[in-house]
Image 1 (cartoon, rainbow, N blue to C red):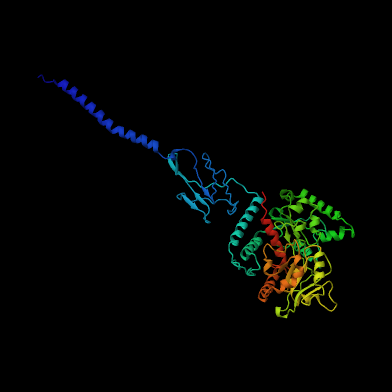
Image 2: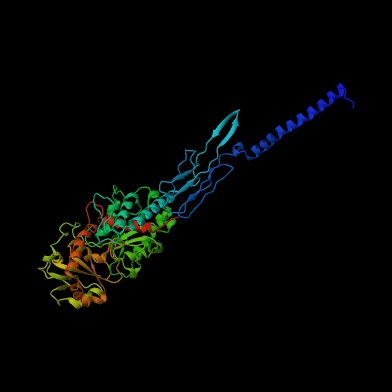
Length: 526
């Protein structure tokens, strides 16, 4: 065998080492290349130049609304379709970027934040960019904010109505509603407190006295004049000078004064009164946007005159849509309890209640039932025909003897008969309550005052017209125990019918306001 020479040996050695180096190099570089590709492919999005993206999931009673713009990182619009949520409030900013979940304090809104860490190179220095929640684009109008406050009030009242206790659970330094005289004491109290917090009334300043901004404060129509005068006071906490802040708008005309100044005695029409009202509504609807905005649904009138409903009929929207507070709460004449409110008729001969409230104990009341009043409508005619001078226990008069006091008869009777006259309202209802005599309502189509709050069956007797011949039998059938309960409840319910020189909480002025407040809660304005 021939051995290789020195030159051949050197060549073969260099070839071997060259090929070996290549293989070693390949084995080292290939894994690094693969790893680099994988790292580049799976690297987080923090290398992009997009702004931070904030995604929200909003869950409220099955509703979920969210819209997020990825190019800008701003929320286009978030709307929660649930009236229990505070509308119009801005969502709080999230300051803790390490947190991924945020639960609202009320436990009904779940806000889930998915935020990625973003980093970008700026002059060879890494800057951490944190995001905060953008403010919603939605801007709420004044009306929407008012409606949102009403929505919260409705929710609060509904929640209170679930408590079926006979006593309110809410604290109150003046008075806590309790007992069966209320349909729901807790709901009424919650509603009353919400009214005190939110209710604002704008009184239109158009119109001149005596037919506007004025009314009688004595005699049978005193309820109408007293309310108007209270609303005219500058220190009335429910009155606002800013119509944008008002929940309702008061039309301060007095039907009683219109009848006095515009009605021709003996005439068979009241067109002059109607034309005055039409002109007045035209003035305020042209000057202000509020009547046309709701077609009068958030406006109210108040009248204790029998012609109140008839007068309102000259303006169809006033009759059909507005809140009408009427003593003549007659459903047969268009009174609608869902939007209209019944006003108590109170006959203040002197303008004051002094000497009218209170009476002897039940054991000192010797007369079973009492009524005195002139012939006025078919119900009284039936009552007088059936009972006048017929029974010592059921004393019915068309005219009292000269030596007999009307107020003393009220206080000497267990039950006071309150029949309707030509119209359904009667001042005898409140007269009986003042005298602590259990009222007996005899009427057709009459809606008793504050009956959306008060349970009249617990402190009064209601007799149908056809049962007038059976009055004594019906009243004698009421046990002494039940009568005593009703009489005690009459003393409790008095506070809601008292006319105070300066109104007190829960008195007749505030109960009237509360009736209007409840009707406004039934309205939702877009």
